[in-house]
Each structure stands twice: as C-alpha cells, then as structure tokens.
Length: 72
Image 1 (tube, rainbow, N blue to C red):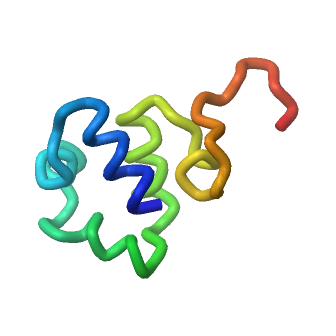
Image 2: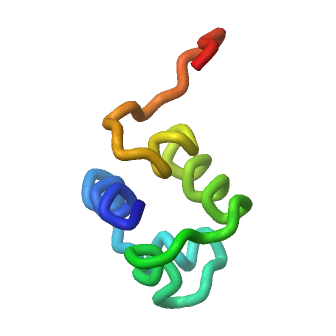
Image 3: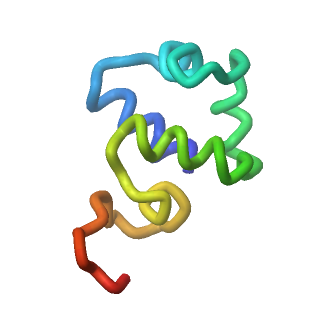
C-alpha cells in the first residue's frame, strides 16, 4: 500500500509529508504502512483524497477507479 500511495503522491507532485498534513495524520505515519496496515478509516481518507478505490490501495492489482454500477 505504501508504494501505491507514494506513486499517487508523485503523480500529483506532492510529498507524503504534505499528504499527512492534509489528512491530519501524524508525521511519518504513512511510511510505517510499508510494514503494517493502517485502520480502515484512515485507508478510506487516503482513497477519498486521491479518488481511488479502497481495493486499489489494499490489493496488488492496478485497478484504480471503481466503476459506477459495478458488482466487483
């Protein structure tokens, strides 16, 4: 998950530090996700910020956006 968030930040030309501040997370918390999984509400915040699905952040696929009306 950390690598995906890192790439999303790079694509938007923002730092992970900036993202943490925008989402009111503690400094360095996202880096810890390289070895652990954050709480569900925090994952939801990150997904909403970037406009991606929670599944995209959690899974190893490259599926980003959830299609409206999609069963999956």
